[in-house]
Length: 282
Image (cartoon, rainbow, N blue to C red):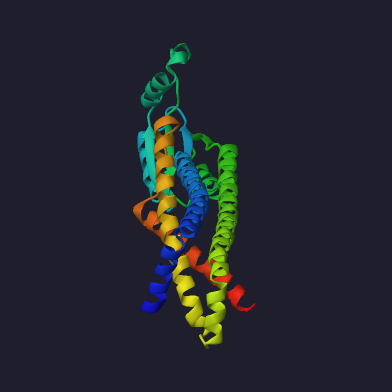
């Protein structure tokens, strides 16, 4: 193992330009993958923020006994899908409308807005079926005049999230495959540059494992260095976008480390494929 590591490091010293080109190519391949991941992360966060606003609102008939509405609030809060329940009185509803819709203040001069029970749902229960199921439970209360939950809006949001998830997985796999191909090509250049050495090693009886080891380590190190450089480029892009375009979210520490290790693993895989193909021909 030590011999293989020394050979891999010696390869960096023997061909510094080729090694730098390989690391740079890997870095830009992973940089494109990292940018896609950053976009996917922020899109997911944006959709999650919108999903948090999904709620069911039941309007209470005028003159309803406060004890009945209080009992209903207690029952609804016990639903497994429910995160929180808020009882909004007629006065509170009017104050909120005047505050949020100040330009239409004349409309509220009559001071007539119904009380309502507002229900926010837990994560995992904001899909159309779960929201409809919660809304149907309000039908048992005689004092409920109307139930609103923006059915069409909830369905569109759920479809958008499904499409975004499917597109994210598909594009992520595509970017990863492209990165593997590019990394494999760069390692292939290093293998071809040392083809004579590999042939001599074969003649003296070296095993495939012995020949592969330095190249696998070299591919792993190049992928690791490329991953670190790609992470730096992604961070600089994130800083630029945050300062001049729009505030965004960056990868957490765990995800960043996982991305660098992913680059190293892709480098290892690309190297294994290239070396394996070459050994089958010699």
